[in-house]
Amino acid sequence: MEKIAVFPGTFDPFTVGHESITKRALSLFDKVVIAVGKNLSKKTLFSLEQRLAMVNDVFANDTRIEVQSYEGLTVEFCHNIGAKFLIRGLRTSADFEYERAIAQVNKIMNHDIETVFLLTSPEHTPINSSIVRDILINKGDATIFLPEAINIQKYINH
Image (tube, rainbow, N blue to C red; front, side, top):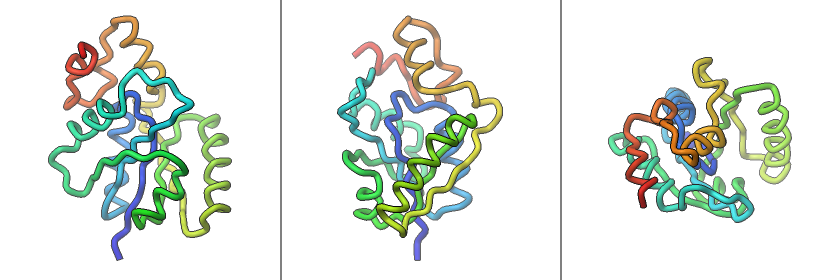
């Protein structure tokens, strides 16, 4: 049976930290589905279509990675695509406490789902989408925090 993992997030934008977690997850799973969330409670800098395009740019040549959008409960999305694992990256102890609570609720809602936590690589610990968004909004150069395959100017100028 194929081991499918879902890496859910808003990914506004998709960072080098997200890229690293995804690549590392491939050593554990047969397929990783990057689930780009449509979260109505979050105001995003990039549209859902732009966020999907960015992630597709990064993994265009990797057949083990699939990019999909979703809305609603993550555990329902996992159930609908036959995934048994959720991937979450942890940068800090605060991330752990937040993610632990979500993982426990997800487990109660669907006991077949296992959440797998991957520690962020040390060089990516300070990077998060909020900081990268702030740099971009203020017209700073955030390219060092983004995967090489993302040409951010393509998305900022439109």
